[in-house]
Image (tube, rainbow, N blue to C red; front, side, top):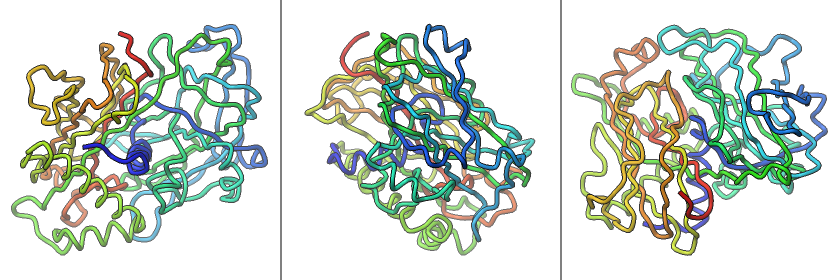
Length: 412
């Protein structure tokens, strides 16, 4: 199944919002009037990433850093807060991001929470969007993407530069690759706080290492996000109003806005159409989901270097299969690019994989499995009412998302 470009960008961006997390990325931007709001300092550095002669490290802080941070508060009826902050690194020439390190101040784990940061993502805003982003103020709520927009088209203007999730270490790229940031670009920092854990102050920051693109000799690394729609009924023995799928989606809309349900419907339709074309009648089950994605036939070959995995608290396994020209993804020649056998939310990574070429028109399949019974065992969710679980931005919702880090062209 091939998406038209508008829908493909929308799905990639909304998904990319949630998992260029585990380690790889693609490019984006912002501006300068908010310097008074955001403490972003730039210094010459000799960090492990900055082995090049002209490398700078920018430290990005939240607006309240000087006051010791913020105590996140979720919107009414929700247990998650997505918060975005805009800042301008004042880039006068194209820069290549060669590494970044997120510094979570009070992050705990699912088992021993202090305040849980579900993820952090660094977005780039195109220069033509800077004025609109400035108008949002120093910070704003930003479920799904980096802006409070309901429009998939608007969200598709933004791409992720780097990401962090529990278990991630420094966000490094494969040797010889970086993420290109055009001159005049700025950044948006999105923090997702999971407030099921506890409430405490947070003063996290992010350091970004960059070098001039023209002098770097590096190949640009891009990102492609693959998603599949979980559709998990309440397990046997559980009951309640939210076990009705319609009621659950209405609740999702109350917590995150109508666009959250629009996105569920969009990926359901896309993945169902792809499964029908492949003759796959088992693409969804009460404990699993999958989706077959196709590279546009009018594109050029790409080379895969890294693959990441992201689910929430019910996730068990995640696999990514590179299926070449087989739209059914059943041919023995397919390549298992990644198989996470025991998914652990507290231990998420992007994995370096053998360089693999995906040609125009090739298919890639992402599959996730879940254990809905874990909801009653996890200390964060066991007191919540039983519900029909779909894709959602909340930590108590679910996702099936893989991010592929690739370069243009065929080179292994």
